[in-house]
Image (tube, rainbow, N blue to C red; front, side, top):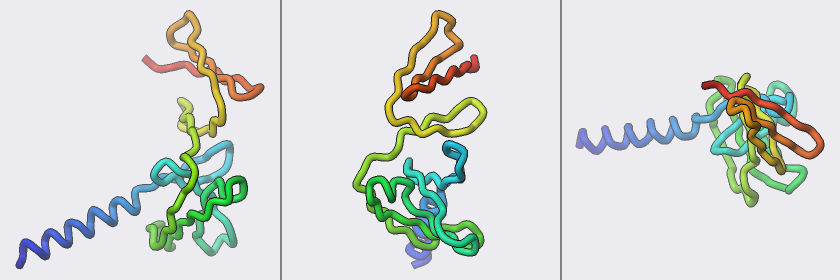
Length: 127
């Protein structure tokens, strides 16, 4: 009986860790919640903690995450009908959403050039 209770508690703890395994990131200058490769943006008054899929308006996605005042996920309705966004993490820890990109490697092995639409980004990789 003690083993059964122990297994149930362990299962509950693992479930809580899975649900609270999110990261607050900045994408294109805006704060976002990153959970299971999908990004969510905060909507509504600052006293509420509702995060909706960042593709809500563009694709009509209804996925939503609710946090309590301690930053724990208390409710989630996750039913994405689209692939997760392509995120590129820069060397300084920022994220960029990439919609279509071409990566070119220069003759110098430590530099990479990323073309996103008309913009170009050059990254120095660490060795």
